[in-house]
Length: 130
Image (cartoon, rainbow, N blue to C red):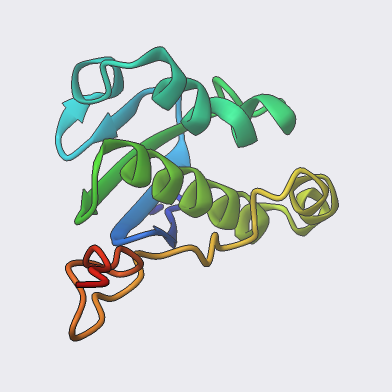
């Protein structure tokens, strides 16, 4: 009998995370590295653990994440989004608490594009009267 495998995709800023969850002991690997080796900041690790702590599924699933693009914080946010989506596909009853905690909402904020005739997206060249 094949073991149950759940898949979801999470996104934040430019980062895209593909998440695979299966029943297990709570091991989390990101790009084939243990979570605490890939994410060195405690805040990023806490970000990923958010949906698992909220739903009391901390040691119930093994999680494998492939993440690319963006920075470290954006990648952590993308993994959190993907884990939340995977938990909902496992148990639809978890949708309400995850949605209330805003873990299922894709953060729409992205980098604003540079405009022509300016040095940046919002910055302007210094005005010279004479």
